[in-house]
Length: 82
Image 1 (spheres, rainbow, N blue to C red):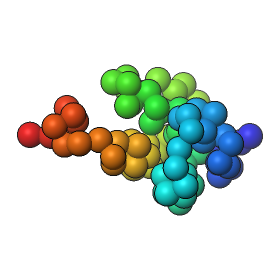
Image 2: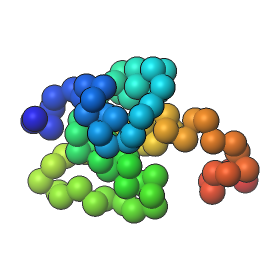
Image 3: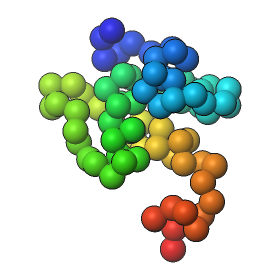
Image 4: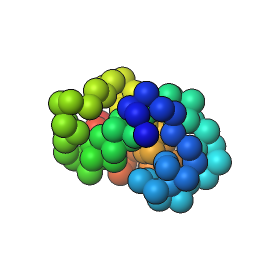
């Protein structure tokens, strides 16, 4: 898979686990690539820029995937809620 290739349902669930149809559709709609999906998973875990520099990632797409994944968490659970 090249970095420009759009992800499939199976590829997304292999990285993020089983997701509902709405989240899958939202992630696919971002146009995220495999490196961006991996980076989003790591951002959610609190790590930043763990993908090698040779693999381009768009921070806006990574951030959008993180927002999608955290959309069902209550505000009190999110660290950035204030």
